[in-house]
Image (cartoon, rainbow over all chains, first blue to last red; front, side):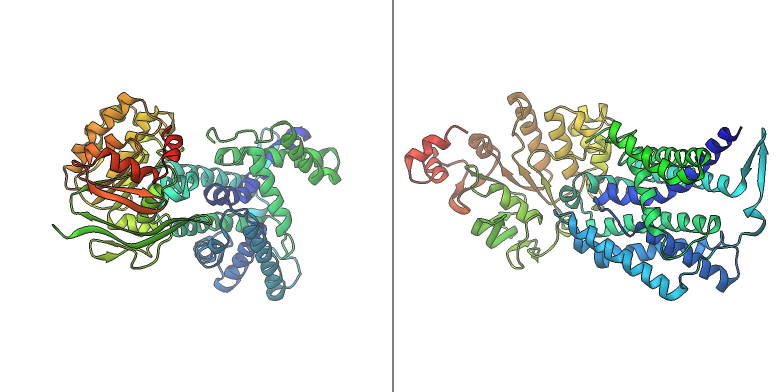
Length: 287
Length: 245
């Protein structure tokens, strides 16, 4: 029963990792930008949630109505103001600039909130659980997983059934020709980053109610996000969800074997997938 | 002669580090179809890319309908009513045939061309509307590329090598569709390797050589000999080599 429990907890944890990964996957897909600051942006969203909760005195999960639009706006401005200038044939400038951004966000958070771990309190929701066939499933992890499925499903629907999604795919296929269609790629990239950071905001809030966070934990979230994207296959959103689940299960199973093996098991599984299926489990069909 | 719809003014352009156009002057009247001919590397495609805004030009170098569009971005030029059918089709691989056409209408310019009229022009596309665009045959892909450009209801349409790599019978059918397009009052610039084809559908032609206009005139009265001289330059030996295109 312990193993089944580890499996179920791993799947639910995978939902959170998929949320970390979805934003990364989106912007890589649209503009081939690898955002090294992604993990720190997740942490930034968690702190924004903390401040919103304290200042407005609202429930941490309700803070999303403030944090999501703020992060989206920040994403658009960041893309139009800085990141668009780094995009070109050379992939190095965006890497360096987002790395710099990562350092800046970490230090700004350290300055503003200190290095003390913080947590958002969601009261009874933290310990609430459902009993299913002898398993005890936490309501919060379950909620996280359901949110992840809806977010990924929503992104998928947006990509394949809306004008904005068509614009994203067209720009991703061929930036030059997309401009001939009257699409301003700088604006499209701005919208993609806004959407990415809106998803990041959700991920950050759910992270912040689940565990303690401090300004230094962004790097590890970035790695989990990357691993989920790569395991699932680049450019495939549902694959990213599966990637998150594989990573989550690997970690909880690893922890079940030996509590010290949690992270190691996740990384080893990632390397194994990379060795066996270098393009991930579900690579996008075209290209 | 009516007011030119398009005028280039001492147009220069670079292809990487190489200068591809050296002070090109060209004029196009409203509703006119002109052909651009010339050998490989003469600057034909670069000219079209410059007009469409994919190659950077300077202000005052390109005028369209009395507006200086020289320094505008490609998406702004598309909004003004210039559409390019690019060399090699360049369809969006992750979009279906219909989505490729729909995104062509993105600029939101009103007019006759919409899905139904494009399907009427190329009925085969309607049958295959939900297929990924790059799974079509070369000729059908070219129809999508033309349809996609028409969907923006352009006033000027630029065709870059639309017969390249297609079977003769397909080329024939595509050229048969051309009058149906330009009869709508759309002006067109056609870049084409096949000189007789280019001359047969145009009223005037420009022959480019090494980024300059080597010859221009009425397509109907064009002398083949003058064209080959302008096409290949004066050195006859070179002409023999290049003639293998």
